[in-house]
Length: 424
Image 1 (cartoon, rainbow, N blue to C red):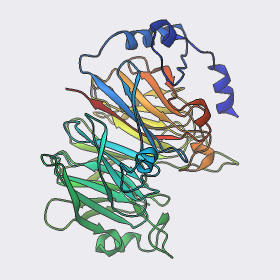
Image 2 (image 1 turned 90 degrees about the horizontal axis):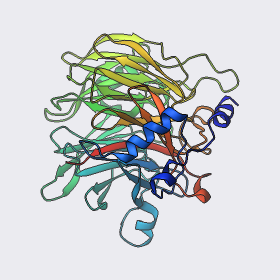
Image 3 (image 1 turned 120 degrees about the horizontal axis):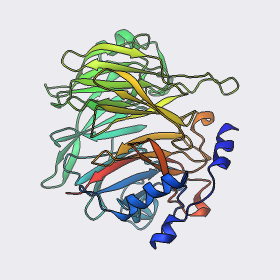
Image 4 (image 1 turned 60 degrees about the vertical axis):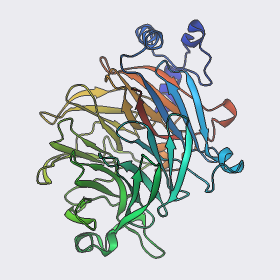
């Protein structure tokens, strides 16, 4: 009900698109006069470092990547269903969930849990050049810092799988794999812990959800879940991948976002808890700070100032980490030098999920879930404006909501992964 009331409160439309002569498929929802001015500024000027926004619609029957330029004009749509139907793809890509680019932003890796595969896209011409199956529940795929590998967190098979990458020849292949259920560190802590869906028939264990690398690319921090939580640190450089540090769910209830500090000295992880739909808590979730030099936990906090802490990302300017609460439509800003909350994020959009920043850090783009979410607990993941919001980071005000899906697809639309692509 509170989301519906907020939606009504802010549901008047600012026709900035018409004034500028830009025709967008989506509508833009502006907050007030100051926000309209911010929006006009954004659309009227090219950033010093140009960029694109790639947003994934995982909605039932959709499976699309919507691409916007820095003036918030939709320039392309990659429709996986149409590509498969036309014979351009040998494998169906269903439920594109998370997206990451390589270090030069020339290639994107899109993980799709429903189809259990990773689509690799050449960004320049939007061509899907490879689809590789890594296992049921392929939840997240990301390039290593040296761009030589893509590691994939597979919830369904409880595996962490490598795709080797030769970007010069555009050659990709399955590489090494860590079966967590066979690792002694994992077995010692998580063997009998129910995780909410990971594993083969008869199993319900803590499985890989999301990962982020240390600055040197030697280690991957891997959150576990979807339900139980926990975290492991995986050595991915020396021979066969292996867990070198493991935190039980009692120590670290991480099951969601990860972010590396700008100087690489700290890794941040969080825990999202949807709570009880009938009796929601005042706040739920937690966030954690690790020293990447020895993988020790140096801080934990249950102060999230909202319900179901979820997406987290470090700003490219200033020591700021943004974290959004999916169930309460808000979030927090953490100072990564002092590891304290310094700002609240209010009214960032309906059911905010994943976020990223423009290269100059002036704007944040936050994906917003749809009215019929196909992942996450429905009472926190259900949104009203599927697409993404645009936030001015200097005053933390929402200046627009972009809804790319045509009106006839809005009921099915459900945005999740989002990533900003720098253009050099």
